[in-house]
Amino acid sequence: MSLITLSDKISKFLMVAAAAWAFGLTFLILADIIGRGAFNQPVQGTAEIVTASIVIIVFLQAGYAIRSRSMLRAEFLVVKFPKPVQKVLLAIGYLLGAAFFLMIITGGWEESILSWVENEFEGEGALRVPAWPARWTVLGGSALALVNYCVMAYLDVFNPEALDSEVDPNAPNI
Image 1 (cartoon, rainbow, N blue to C red):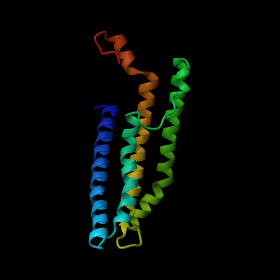
Image 2 (image 1 turned 135 degrees about the horizontal axis):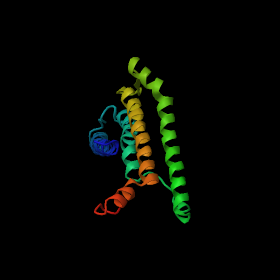
Image 3 (image 1 turned 30 degrees about the vertical axis):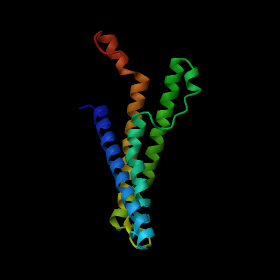
Image 4 (image 1 turned 180 degrees about the vertical axis):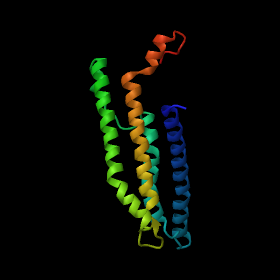
């Protein structure tokens, strides 16, 4: 299995997991709203769970957003340039994206380890939520995002499909 295929499978799995998590959160929020309105009994800890979950959901979906080309891109000017210039600009953009996520990893590594070792919790309300799942999801999601930016740079700059179709006349032309 190639790195590209593995990256795609992991990205899709994490995207589905994040969507399921978000779907589950809607029921928690709905229960909290109904509990507050109808019974004057809110679901304890809803705010803390939702706060931590938003970070987790975003970083679980980051790799898929990059790989599916759904990450924010401004191509209105780039498409006006010749193909070789477009490839250089794409490479620069992908490398900047990879560098950004590398900085998140290097900047958050120590805090993630400490949150696990010291059993760090967030929230002062009815429920205290462990901080380490969100911190480690940020690191894992950033690592996958970094890999996916490198994959996208390889695919868009070197265009291996075009090279394969030149060698094999029966290969699909994408």
